[in-house]
Length: 100
Image (cartoon, rainbow, N blue to C red; front, side, top):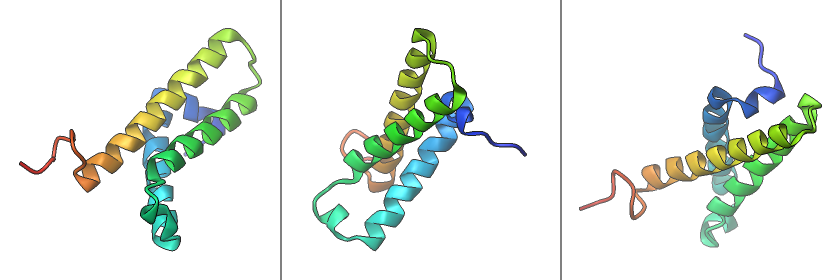
């Protein structure tokens, strides 16, 4: 199985990256309690997904408007999926598993 950084910009890569970003935020949250205390989870998910997409965009060496738009869509998908995973796990308001 070959994995390249530019795969983050594909649909399947975005889905896999969302899980990785969520996992990374959870590990950091358990390691650094200040993250949970100040509710920085969503901000960290946005920042980590942005960093991942920027690195993938630079790695693919295609600096066109189409490629930039694709990178933006990938970032939005990863950030939203990572936030959605977090909301479902914590049963945040509006999630499918929200308590009745």
